[in-house]
Length: 157
Image (cartoon, rainbow, N blue to C red; front, side, top):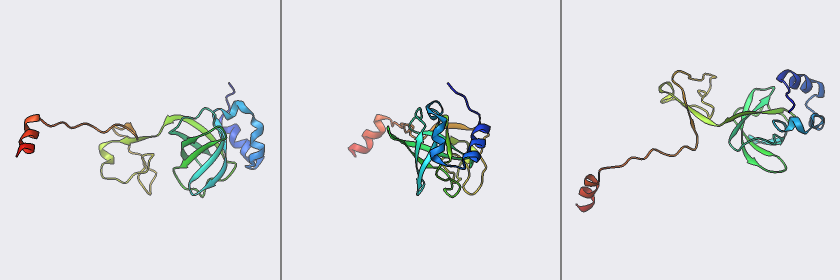
């Protein structure tokens, strides 16, 4: 497995001037965990590479440090939903897997706040980390059961 650091990607990004056809020269070994933006339209990214990405996994976009969620996996590419501004993302930007599925951070400090899917307060880059518990987005709802006598009383009346 070929390990490539962030510095090599940023240097290569400058060297190739975000030309997507030249990013392909890195080879298939890098495309398992890395890829590049092919198209971007209305917050939806079509990407090449990222062969080992999982559905619902966070993907980091270099050099803008914006995240996206992998949702549409196919043989021809990966469909990503952007979790940030699309003005800083361009075709040819490099992508890398984070290895973590999308989850919502939950704490008492985040009660009553409007947060984005990554847990940041809207309009600020503040992540509330005290007593932070990460819960998956598609977690089952808690089950509340009532006493049978209570239900029978209201159903028979």
